Image (cartoon, rainbow, N blue to C red; front, side):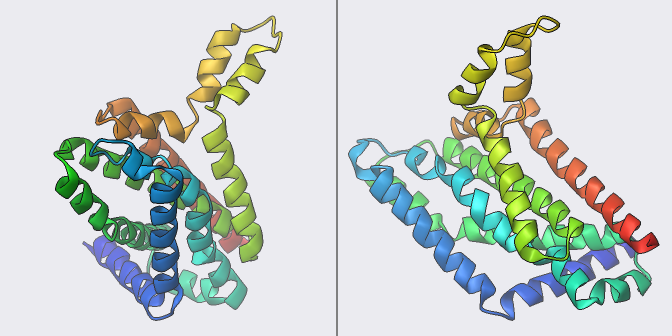
Length: 252
């Protein structure tokens, strides 16, 4: 119960920090404007001739690539820069309580941003008869993608007190997580000559690290346990690594 109270307190504090400044509202406006632009202008939403959100979901990983690291870069970098991380370590809470609280707050924030796109769901239900089960699984996959990127951003924010550096490192890692499953990358690996390993096995191994295939499976309405485990593995590993980094800084 103590752990839950501590996590809840950190979560409430973080959410207050989000909405006490214009940052949250600017993020929501940019997020919704970009979602609308890519869906209707580049996604040819009205030209598809069917009630589906495929042109909406396809852009989510690319938008999260920049928006999520931008939101997450302050999580620990700001604490280190202002020196409040030392105060945080003196409080009667364990480091993982603070990590979990900050992460839960960030996840709720991103979840709210997704909820604000509800007019898209209403629109396709007015225009036709969509399979809302597929829509829900698409939202679920989108949230897991954002949550995975948030965990990566949490880790990079713990590594440095410079928010810009944290942002750049997170973007690079998330970009690699997107691109490693794309045909240009897998085709380049296929061209390699590696005698000690089956090249197709190597390609499958590298492609397995990409968020895109796992997200696309859910976008099609299929919730595969392997896809959920992939996202949970990224989240748990990143948060675990964040705890190791913060404990090492605490001991210095």
